[in-house]
Amino acid sequence: MAWSGQYLSEARRDFGSVLSYNSNTWRVPSVTAVPIVRSLPGHRGDVAEQLLYLKSIGWKGLVILANEPDMTDQDAITRPQDMAGLYWYATQVLPDATFITPNTIDLNYLDEFLDHATMRRKDRVGLHIYQGSRYDGVHTWPGAWMARAESILARHGVTNRYWISEAGLAEVWPADVARRYAAEMFASGAEVVCVYTTNCGAYTPGCGWDLYDKSGALTVGGNALKDVFRNGRQTGGLPVTKGNEMKINMSNEPVAIIGAIVGLVEAIIALLPLFGVALTIEQQAALMAVVVAAGSVVSAVWARSLVTPVANPRDNDGNCEAWLVMRSWFRDVFPVWRSRGWRRRQL
Image (cartoon, rainbow, N blue to C red; front, top):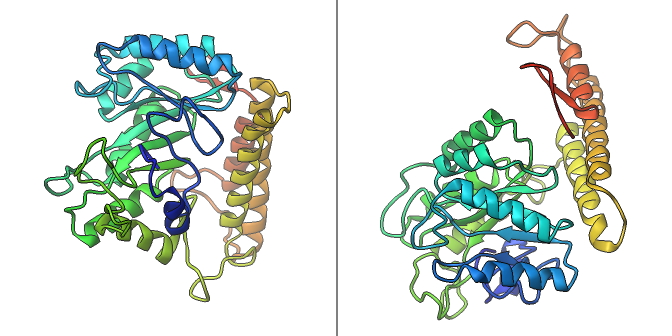
């Protein structure tokens, strides 16, 4: 839950929320309370204070770095190259932490940020989605917006996972609009989606994005979000319905099950350093690559055994599917070679 401090137990019950952040979580960080390091114009020294405090307590977990640097009423780090410099500085102060950055709304800003920043393998790209205001309707659906964001990441050769580190459901939106907006966010390729906000409280009363009103009752947006999870809980982009309406097992959805297992194992690997297991960045990357590659091979073989065979199967471009599987396996297990000048990209 983004910028949330109230109704967190209710959010866990209603939405299955597992983490939150707000302006105070950097003081008392934990696995479920993610610290956010940011500053408004005129208070730039806050960034150093927050980073150095986290260093003093030996923090090695998640850190959200910056909040909408592209917005003049937020962090307002006008030049993307300066945001890239802040990211580099943060990695020097907290080399063992995992950063989520730059947390920008403007995709042009993200594009320019990636022109200057070299993302460490273990860090995440943070994106904010506000493709509609609290006063009117949606102008761009999340699915279309995320497709553009993913194309920017691909163009820069960035394979890091990404978070939707803040997104809101306006209270004035009709229920069907809010449900579609939420469903598209959770059906995206985002590793984590942080929804703003359980309740704005005294900080920005009447902000228009509350999931719970001041009495603790669900708003239109809150009910829409709950409906998305009740009617089709989003797991890796796949709707999983409770009860007998849709039972998923290895016989009818092997790809989904294996994908979920791979995601779980990757998450466990990422958490190991937080529990004292000494792993270098390279070791984590290598382990994750092997897990992904093994999952891809098992998924392809198992799924193939459960469908009607097709003679000489090929994709739309005429490539043999068996070759595509093996090529994907090699690219996941070994360092990737870029065709332009055969420049090696590290795992």
